[in-house]
Amino acid sequence: MIEHRLAALASPMLSVLRIMSGLLFLAHGTQKFLYFPGGDSAGFGWTFAHPGAYAGLVELVAGALIAVGLFTRPAAFLASGTMAFAYFMGHASQSFWPVNNGGDAAILYCFLFLYFVFAGAGPISIDAYRGRHAGKVRGT
Image 1 (cartoon, rainbow, N blue to C red):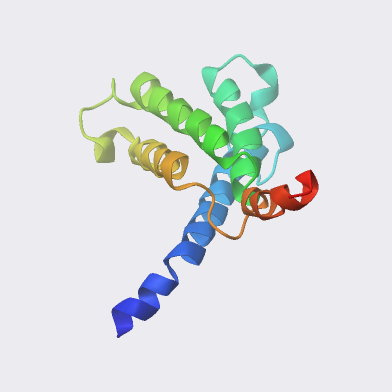
Image 2 (cartoon, one colour):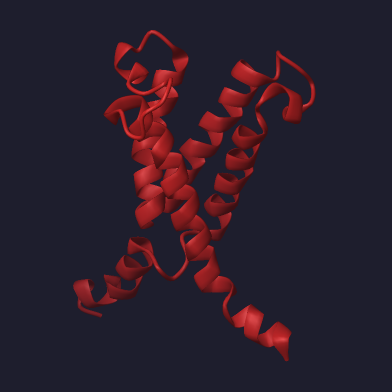
């Protein structure tokens, strides 16, 4: 009985997971480029002297797209690849173990966004809204 109730909520929870992970990812980009939230790395993205600045652009744009559920699959694909690159370029050389090299968040983001490439945005998204109304726009 409880399994059926939980299963009925799986699709909306996909959207909740997407929204929250997109907002968290977006926060990395806003810190690098919009100085919010403040911190040691706030604003460093504008120099483009560090490869993390380019990742910050992806975090800013893809994070916003993922959060609202617009072009979710391509945005998630780009974000997943960026996090894989960030892990291998910035973390893996420090230690084999992610918990020791600080790359556990990059790996988690990588696989979470890879999941969204296959699962899509869920029902609470602009992608879903556009899909529901595509036939009406075309006149079918």
